[in-house]
Image (cartoon, rainbow over all chains, first blue to last red; front, side, top):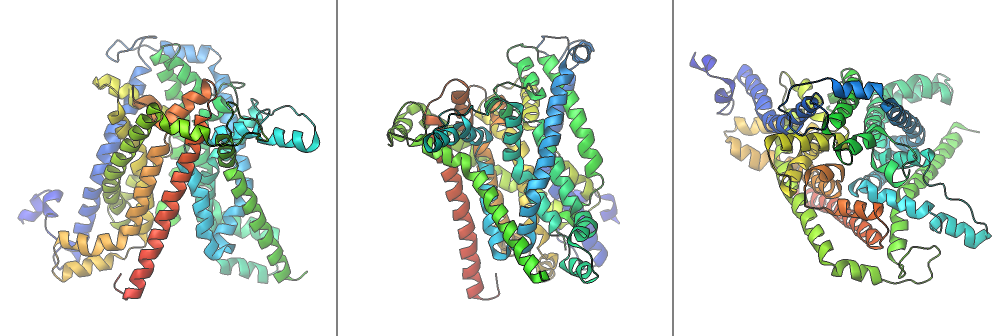
Length: 305
Length: 273
């Protein structure tokens, strides 16, 4: 009787009793309790900062405090000026990056999930490793590769005696850099997706006389879709938020939206404007992520039995 | 051509393509290594003067030593806190059935699906609004916001393969909560926790966008390298880059080997593990 009135945290103070219902209730409360620390962290470190940035976007331009009378001035400036070109560059380059990644990652994902057997662990490890070196360092390695007198052009010169122009500092090179940096983020979700395709189903389709292309289109692709979509979403979001690629490899030939934000916060000393652009970016990315994540059951993708 | 023949061909093609991708992934690290091994002030390929001059100079520099100690301090503290928080979060994520779990899972994923540079900025504004001065301590907090969700995912994958009946059986046999945690849960889940710790350390160590905005006057290794890249070349950058890559490789491969060894030792001990 009392137990019904006491709140959940109290009730779970002791281990479950023998009854099935008690156990179920204990498990449910334990889940809630264990979720609290991280939710607190995210409340203080994710939700609150996002609200702050939204708040700042309504402050008068070039001010540094959040306790002032709100205004729409920053949003007016964003829509009136040419910020949309940076948005288009960022979104466009992200789309191209995702498209390229889908094509180049699929065979590797297929290999990891189906054909490599015990080598799959080693290949996975080799692909994870670069994630732990900060991306600007890895991009800098490509600068050393592409730059005049660097590994590529230097090798061509000494082998064939031809001097070529460097391909650095062009939009194409920025996309190359994004494909490079975000490859693992496409590969791993995709591998999870492909490993969800049961081999029997493919064999059955094969026995029934389906061609390789038909099997791919009608069996493998639909079943691997969750992993593929998650991978695309992840790489898209990261690519939209990318900043180092355009700076290190692109030499400012293109100004992505993240660069606009950084300029507003640093050189221009206009925090509210930078906050406004950030909020626009968050809205675009957030709408997309929520729309896609809503459709997926994470337990199934991450491999609950 | 027979079906088996086609299969063999496509497998060979897949393997060849994977080798190409792995080479692609390691190309920049290789270029960095080459650039660190030249003795001249500027990098020119093919290298004419090989040598370790810049390695010596870089490590003799007091500035670099201070950077390394800042980066390592941040990464160690992040790892310690992250493993504990992510352990509980992973249990809520993958172990317990509870109402709100599916929303919880999506909330946990949100910071991962979020542009880090924008998150860094938002944190900076938040610290500013609270009147907190940014330093390496605020950077620890910023790293946690991003690292803990990743570590939660890593540990969750292990938790998914954990049989809840084990814990329940221990409870039925009269074990206390603490005993169950120590004798059943942790021994079964430790490879996941270990991977979670490795991920936390390495992700914090390599992070650039969050540190850039949230560590104030302190500087981490990735930030220093970035500043040097933008403001004129020094061969110290490839040296530090190579150290980062090789260090991560040693930690990761060593950690992986360690897990395999312990598993093998346990398997030999008998079916208790």
